[in-house]
Amino acid sequence: MSARAVNRKAALPLSVSAMPAGPASWALALLLAPATLAAAQSPPATDAPSTAAAPATGSALPQVTIEADRLRHEVYTYVTSMERAIPRDEAMRRWQIPVCPLVAGLPQDEGEFMLARLSTIVREVGAPLDKEHCVLPNFVIIVAPKPEDLLNYWNQHHVGFTGTLRETEAGFQRFRRTPRPIRVWYNHSYGSVGGSGPVLNGSLQLGVTSWGIANGGFSSLGSKMLVQDILAFSSVVVIVDGRKVVGLTMAQLTDYIAMVALSEPDLDARFGDAPTILRLFSARTAGQPLPAGLSSWDKAFLKGLYDLSLDRVTQRAQITDRMVRELGVD
Image (cartoon, rainbow, N blue to C red; front, side):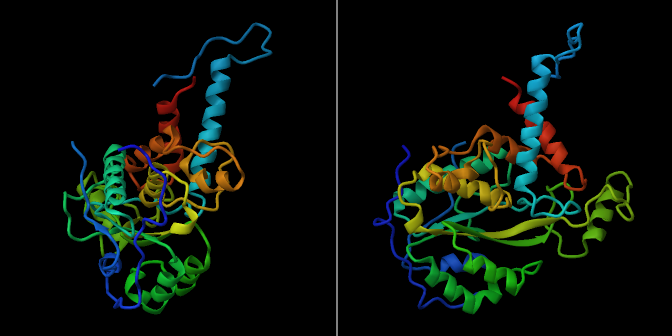
């Protein structure tokens, strides 16, 4: 399906007046009966730096070395800018349970396009994807013509949707009152070190230590090289202001949502000239060319994130190294 511009008039309106409260975040979307609900669909199925000797005068480094150093600096700035809101002694955020997406508020064909593209991205970057026609959505996307109405309703009933870890009343109010074309709310649970095990509900330290005993005997207690908290997504809610995405293609909108929902980037970070879909709205405000979709940097970052062991404090450096190897130097 070719990319198309988002049609605000075609989107079905959302009604929140009759929405009862519920204990789980995915219930929020299930209660939006007037909106179009699309069930989750699964799609069909290093070069080392040059060591050439510098000129005899020692006045210049080989060009390839200069370019490699510049690329590493730019990539590291990109990674640390994206992750600056997450403390260095905590793991970078990602999914550890299968993702079950659901879209509300779009016409049927646009909703199906978004779900198919999201599922393809999830698979390509190595994130876990739930089976076809999964029944417990945990990644909910709501396109609303007036998100303020939905957020005001949520403000009255949000206790059942704030999760159990780190979310506070003040945090929710900042989320509700911060005007953005796309708002993202993350619920977290304790996660496992490798990312392949079940989400833990008990003590993080006990979980990490138990994993270490079963996999070679290391202990995390007292080590400054291991992160203190491993929080994984238990659910993510994305609220799109239909008035502020008019004119964007469905590919641009979908790729932006994928980036913010598969990681937890700082949406206020300044990325400069870094090629990233996260510049979509800032570039439009500045009258600059818009990114067409996920860049090679974005894809390399997500692949590194989902291939990462979350127990080390050097996660950003590890992702940077992987991205530099994958992107190479032209």
